Image 1: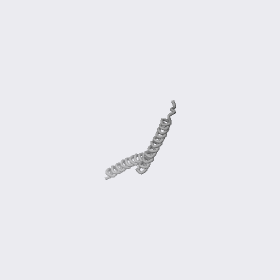
Image 2: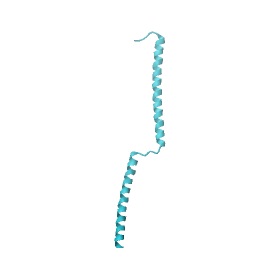
Image 3: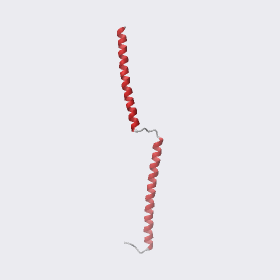
Image 4: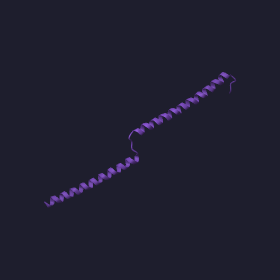
Amino acid sequence: MQSDNPIISDFVKLMNSAAGTLAGVGREARDSARERFKELMGEMDFVSREEFETVKDMAAKAREEAETLKKRVDELEMKLIAKS
């Protein structure tokens, strides 16, 4: 249904233009917020999951080695006590 009234036609054009502009502003605000969030996260000292898992595995291995060495030291101490 089209209107022959130029005032209504101009008003409809204005509203369509405003809606498009508002949608563009919304996209721009979203993109800007996303970029600022990325910058904020980049400034923090986070590690990747891969780095975390690597260090976790290294710590577990070091713990196992420490336990093995402790057992060897205990055994050597017992042998020294037995010789005395």
